[in-house]
Image (cartoon, rainbow, N blue to C red; front, side, top):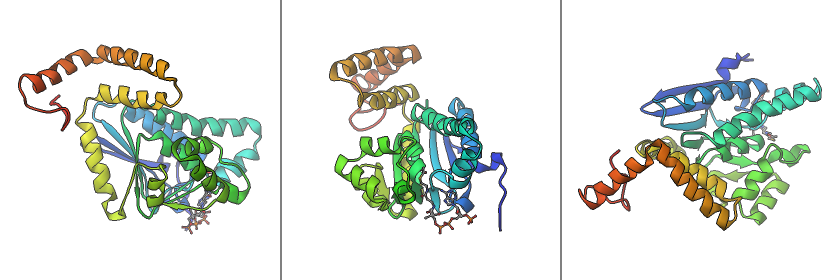
Length: 275
Ligand code: ACO
């Protein structure tokens, strides 16, 4: 039957034990991204970003898709029918939440449970860590319907995959399994589908125990590095470390050092200090 989903229902989320589980919630449309979904996702992630009870955000999909990319009907056809102003508005609504997620204050994990196409590579790349089911399917299907991988998707594969693999992937429009996506650098790790949630939970719980300010500084630093010269990187990292001091970094480091050197209660090489 046809489902008319209200804007608020295009995204679902729960917060449990410091972890926000955010879902693309249009399973009947394979979670493709419509303007409504993009607006709602923008609101949801903004609301979660500074909540004290959220330490980690997981982005996943309801049903058998992660996201089937942009909505060919509502994002492309219907928007284009309304002219350039509406096209640009819809682009901004999509790109802005991906950008916010790329520079999110909290660590983020993409839990890729199924189909991931085209525009889905934007939020996929935005997440710091991506764990896929072995049998998830990844595709730059743009070429199959006569466009190029826009909305950052070409940039995503060029940044994450070896160039030969990225080029083949973009030109051929053949899908990769989760396992292949792992081998080619598109995701961090692929696991059997029945272990997906447990593995993501394990990572999220480990991240939730670490110092949030140091994590934020770390993820932003690593993202910045790819576009910096060595000298600029070195300088940026000194400043970023010093900026961390505004958030209690000096005290945290002193305490961690004390626990290691004096109390001998933990080893940084083997685990996280007690915050
Ligand atoms: N845009 C609009 N509608 C979509 C999209 C999409 N990207 N993906 C799925 N749907 C809709 C289908 O039209 C269908 O709607 P209906 O029930 O009203 O007929 C419903 O979702 C279910 O889709 P099916 O195709 O029936 O599902 P199935 O499980 O057989 O196939 C698959 C899943 C392979 C994901 C298929 O839906 C598909 O190829 N989707 C398009 C994927 C794609 O190429 N996305 C665009 C990438 S390019 C970009 O994002 C810029």
